[in-house]
Amino acid sequence: MSAPAPIPPRVLTVAGSDSGGGAGIQADLKTMLALGTHGMSVLTAVTAQNSLGVQGAWELPADAVRAQYRSVVDDIGVQAVKTGMLSSAGLVDTVAELLAATGAPVVVDPVGVSKHGDALLAAEALDSVRTKLLPVATVATPNLDEVAQLTGVTVTDEPGMRRAAAKILAFGPRWVVIKGGHLPGEAVDLLTDGDEEHWLRAPRLDNRHTHGTGCTLASAIACGLARGHDVPTAVRNAKEYVTGAIRAGFALGGGIGPVDHGWRARTAR
Image 1 (cartoon, rainbow, N blue to C red):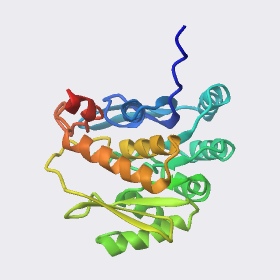
Image 2 (cartoon, helix red, strand yellow):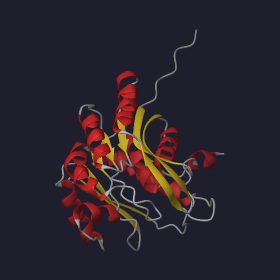
Image 3 (cartoon, rainbow, N blue to C red):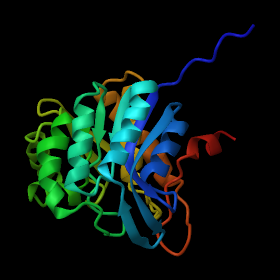
């Protein structure tokens, strides 16, 4: 009689759906599978989305989000949670309340706009992100546009990333990753808790097909935390995974294609 299969680490994404499969829930679950965890999902919104942009978005009711979350967490349990598109103050408040009572590490990707510049978070929800969602985050992962939305700080260089990190940490997350991919030069991110600093650098890759990078990074960090890694190790490993996924990103449709979440499996063939 064979022994039962070991249970992989369980990671939950609370995010919107990307019908084109490059970002959102779809990117999160692909990342979780690629990194050897069991991915679960709470859907917050449905988008009509492709390589050219977002053509429509429909938010789910807070009761539906709460029911999905309780269904998964109360029965299956969870070892890390990642949040993405929450779209409204009501959803931010609902999810923050659920996370505060869960006790698992939380990675907050404060999604504000899509890769194509489409708004994915209502302006009136920003205060709820600052006062309710970020305080329950183990790690927050804003890009420079999201930093500007949340703090009013426009980052143009690496010293500006340090100032931005201090502003985000003042809202309450334990750690923050300021993603500097929009700056010229190397693709540099700053991870800090206000005391430790880790500058994570990677070569800038000549590939425009980068749809889903933010979702993928946050999900990869959550996978590391679910495995019991400390935050610097989880973020460092996630950066390595995302860099490989960007390198292997491919064209789909007529616009910006996705990163390749399965690049390691394809490389191993």
